Picture 1 (cartoon, rainbow, N blue to C red):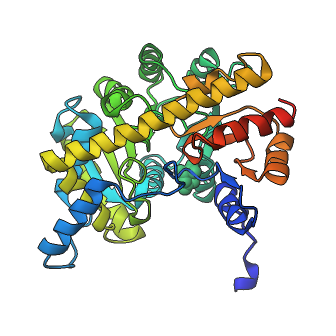
Picture 2: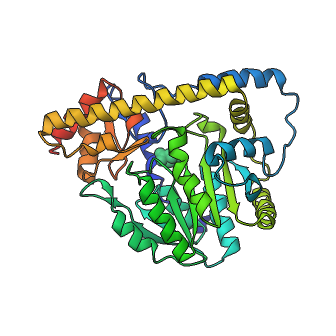
Picture 3: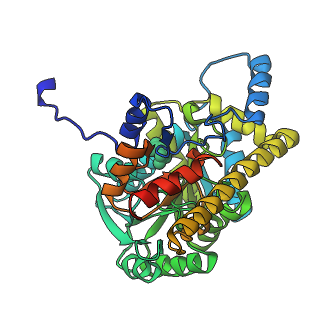
Length: 394
Ligand code: LMR
């Protein structure tokens, strides 16, 4: 039986993690996988997470199952974090999932249950695993224009034109903030125009929000999701706690469904719980419990938000430093976009040959589409990257 299996393509981001690990060069720089690193190259446990973990160790008396959709307290806390007061709580159903990836997977499955012919509109480019999961599920994808390689900004006109082709029963996947892999984002006026197109087409939006707090701030990064949620009759939201709580390996995420009708909310809540049961039964609880404790405790929440803000500002500083270094070396502002982009990533827009040269000649690891993880840099390595890029002829 197993002889019938086909070799599956390796995930390009995860493959890069291994290549980096195996590289013996002491000066190597990892700008690959989207994991936050501080100036020492470490991915620390956030202070509030550690404090919550200590409390939990003292207080937790059972490891018995919680609920198929996870702890309702986690759902309440996360709905509040992502949606604020944008919609009535009674119109939102939610289920905890293993990370944001789990939420995406469940969202696609739920959309297919609702419409077996669903097409999912995805930005060009999008996070490669979106495409991989959709392909695995046999769901048709339609690409909409997004990144303009000339300006390294958003091809907004092209995006609107392509989104206008969606129809009722289609799912339109949007990145709520900090677009992965490009770092190029819409402003709120542009989001409003996207909402108008969505309403015209009758398609259902799905927002993947995996980096809330990494772009312009916790509230600012949620503004687009809130705008969409308060404007459309139905939507899905896949939210991840991996990055903004730094709980990557705990697999902490949530899928929310917003409906105009409270009766529908009961139906979607049941579907979310059913999907959890079919795929893995109960979702992981540890990370979700920590997140709930932090969000519900004023002191822990304030400390978490402060540390997240430090992380955000340090990435902004590195963006500015890299843009400045490249301006000095190239004598042009062609890399000024790096300071404008937001989130963990920027797509540099350089060729795959340059990406290979960076790796082979300079031990600098970026994803093949020239996505760099800004948090993989520090004040000392920014000039090294700028020099290496310049040596590669950019
Ligand atoms: C990334 O884009 O690097 C992260 O979301 C990690 C992953 O699982 O790919």
